[in-house]
Image 1: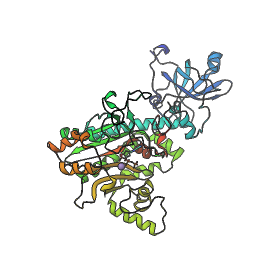
Image 2: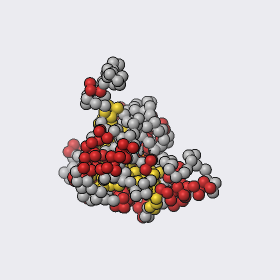
Image 3: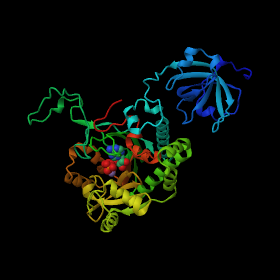
Image 4: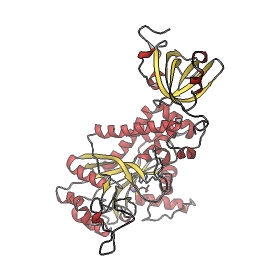
Length: 475
Ligand code: ATP
Ligand code: MN
């Protein structure tokens, strides 16, 4: 039965994803993984084993008479085991190979009376409460493999296009995206805060000798780098203390921020469109099995939607034109929760109306009123709008926000002052405009928003391993 030279005690572990492809039946193999289910009769047991390398399990066939009774009792759902056995052609439909067990070792038992993942069909809400165990479900195995693949896609895209991966700091002293949204970082004794003469907190005693927070964006630092390396991107954790309990907001999320010297807003849009299509195509090419599972379970239109985005040109439209379309919709009886008028910041319902109802395509909206955008965006000649661009996606709304940056020192400084940005705190940022300034552009993609789109999941808490949201930081 065993091939020559193959003895059980010399076996090396093989991943299940590889084993399921093999046809060299009769070979000795070893797998290590977690028991998903066990069924069988008085003679044989069938164990579905998963090792995380694929959504698919491998079937382990156990001749009960050949194994110790105590050991067999331990082969319950959730247990972790090693199996040495013989690769065999599977009579079961849908899988080529199974393993006839010769030797089983139990690494870790799992008490079936308390293991929370016994039966199938747990709700996503319940699984969020056991986020420490949910990676062991089919759904979250698929999601986290896709998440990994998308991170690889991002690095590959930028690397192949001449971008450098630049690490912007996580702790920052600048607060230019608007106060109140940042998480403060301090080692001060909160039970015993020293005040300065003005009655404020004396930050000179704090770890950095000044007030610091977790970053809301790596963009300002990326701009510094782009003015030296040409094209860079950041990809790291980002923090926002905004109290928005929505299916699209996290307090801690990952952001991808390319920044490119000499790119104008058109180049920026081209880059965003090419980049996002590349990532989605990567998923279609490499995550077939996981996407098929998620599509079957949660979202039948998933593949169509992904292919549609890859194959179609995004609509490019000025904000002012977008407002006209939305106003016409209201005039025709469409009801929005939030009012629509020129100058309004678009809510996700407006963004989704443009994308899902009106154009039925992803939309890049440009040239927003300067009042609702950041101080660093390049001002248009009309004096009213800035060269901003938001990429709006079906089911998500805003997935990317970006702009051409204001490269003129005087204009940038006066806009910073107008918007109450403490310019003495960002002298280093302003310096780029004093020494060899250049036109440049960039954008931020919310990694989890991209994952929402790619996986078809409806809640952003389900595409990050351990979500941080208001009143929730367990695990
Ligand atoms: P929104 O209007 O949706 O709150 P924003 O305009 O505040 O987003 P930006 O500052 O433009 O967001 O950030 C760039 C990108 O980061 C957004 O397009 C989005 O994809 C993502 N993003 C922003 N805030 C969050 C958040 N709280 N959780 C997850 N992703 C986010
Ligand atoms: Mn934005």
